[in-house]
Figure 1 (cartoon, rainbow, N blue to C red):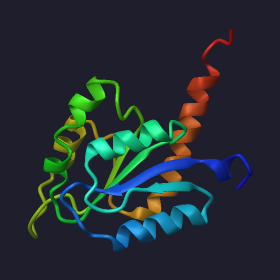
Figure 2 (figure 1 turned 135 degrees about the vertical axis):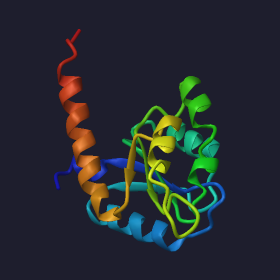
Figure 3 (figure 1 turned 90 degrees about the vertical axis):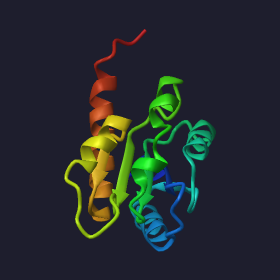
Figure 4 (figure 1 turned 30 degrees about the vertical axis):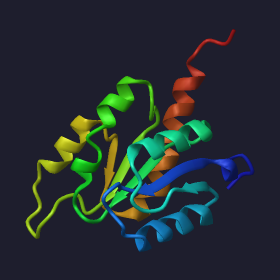
Length: 148
């Protein structure tokens, strides 16, 4: 990684109703290991806390939300109103167990995207690649904007 990429920042936390800490810590360690600065909000993090962290770290590239208890949809209900208010204006990446019970509902991803979740990952090892792709996409768009 270059010096510039080592300063890349992400906001990480576990959804409001979820107290599962192990995966959160492992993801934070993995991202730090590849050069990211991780603002880790820990477990039981409400969307307002993600929003405040993004305001405090406006250079953050993404907001990463984990959910293992299957209640992400309920925990993210305020996302549309926050986004309409101009908050959480970064890619929202969600991962983990996204539904309750042993039978998974295929429509859950569509419901979460309708709330405003931008990306859903089922494998945390995909996260660095997704962040790199989002950065490259952002850099291409930014380079198309006329200067001064």
